[in-house]
Image 1 (cartoon, helix red, strand yellow):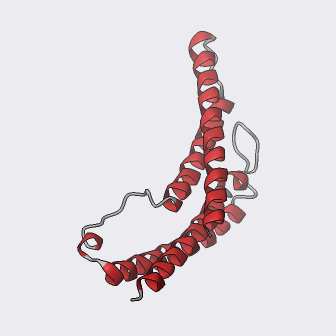
Image 2 (image 1 turned 180 degrees about the vertical axis):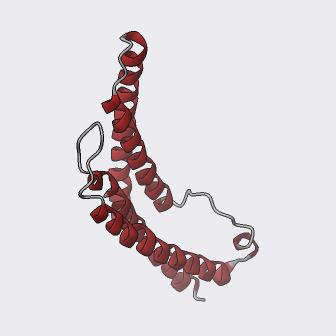
Amino acid sequence: MIKVRKILDKILEIVCVLLFVFITLVGSYQIITRYVFNSPSTISEELLIFSFTWLSLLASALVFGKKEHMRMSFLADKLTGAKATYLAIITEIIIFIFAAIVLVYGGIKITSLTMTQITASLGIVMGYVYVIIPITGVLILIYNILNIADLVSALKLGGN
């Protein structure tokens, strides 16, 4: 399980870095064409929007997998031992249900609905842009399963 998590983390880190570099390069190109040549690029505008969306979603999956996401821990911090672990498992199950319904199922629906729409500047199928939603959902589900497995192992080791 640890190996799977490390591989997934490394892949997402590399993809996020590459997307960030791409956004930086396209953003610089857009600034140069707009202010130096006084000829703004509509293609770069769409590329930036879509790339930033992909980066945001993939980075959120990565942060979730590393358990570095923001959370309200006022209740969880008051619990210790097995009770805290059970609360964490319940939280993971709720996140699993949300990711499965909203991101995976809903993402597949919105992706299939937009397979006939074409973007204005790039001329690509809009569904290719939206496909990141179910992909992110699947990544979060994988991390979620890994998190639950870690919590169950902690319970077994703790003897509670």
